[in-house]
Image 1 (cartoon, one colour):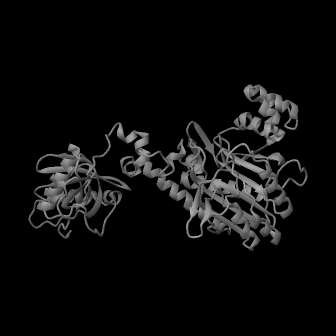
Image 2: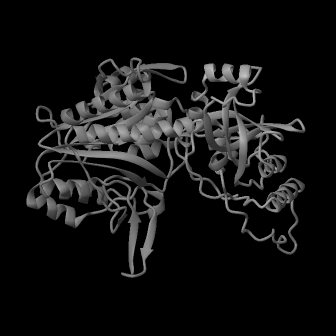
Image 3: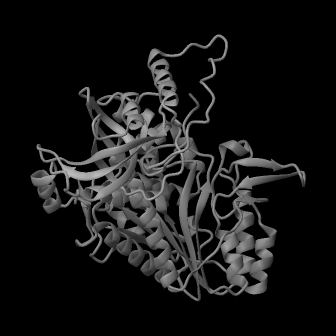
Length: 525
């Protein structure tokens, strides 16, 4: 392994008034020692690298035995395979003329040995100046030690990158939640299980994309900066475009743009991308989140319910590998292979409260009893909003969290942008999928009558509370261009939106959304 010498100038002095922690100062001194060896502490291009896992797999027991039996003979040719690996130093033990290290990369760990006798002089000098957390490139024979550990016996050692900051304290630092989220660049190499989750997330998203393409859905991209934030009732993030001197909003949903594509003649479309909502943070919510949203022309709610059930089952099958798609989530065992359950909104309401959802008087009385301090507000509420608040209090909790379940037949009055059922206009052609107590995906037969849509837009605007400012109420708009698109003619359609982050949480057994988002939003330090 030949490498150009160091061309980096000596370490500059710290800015005036700033001192260095003694550990960083020692690491800087070691960096200068590396430069004195003629090596570049921040490395150069390295070719022919094997992963740590590949290096371990190269071990040949027969070749190792042959070397142990005849390696000291002058004419003997070493039959053991060679490997060049790069990794971060996780363990380091200096025994004088023999230095042991454990290197880690994305595939796992492997031990290396750096012997003064067998390694080149610059490489052995580098080993003496190495600190925990440094990135090292090692080349040598793959063998097994007397204690049975597969090891790369280094013939050369070169720098990959010097770590000036020490790794987190092994027992406390690596489990500190705030440290893990703020310094994901440390968490990923310090906690292999974290890297495994995000590799799995990437695989799940790829699997979802391939599934949708296999169903002949066309992937598209719609604007994230929008002149109006539409497609959902949520507070947006606001910004301003200087070039056109106009306000813009980060999108809260791609719905209205995707429906425009159905008008344009695209029969099946989907998008996997970020949405942004200026609302709260908790275990299930992050201000920016990833959604799959899809629309199927000439379909309906049943079309997209089948789509989602098959897609989720396929993703669970991918995660399970060669086993049945039965996966743990906390204390739950979720069987994704079984048909997803279905239960009506009204049935759940009766089970929760003991009276039908259309009994407005009993609903108001129940909500007042639940929140006596808000009795006056309850009297002023729309009766169906009273019903829905009661439903969210107790109805959803009746679902079996281990059984993926569609709640169907929501009241039409609380689903204003959904087509009513043909056989019962009081109910909406809507279904929401719940898994593990979380709402994962809403499904709709889409409203495509421009006159009804315009009326619903106006009703939403009229329902805004004039006494609240825009930051205290859900954001609703009247999208004139979308009404114009509907007047051109949108075919009947089924639509769905699947929360990718929540799906990944469930499939990877993670209890909070921050554990499946690489860089969750946090307050500045």
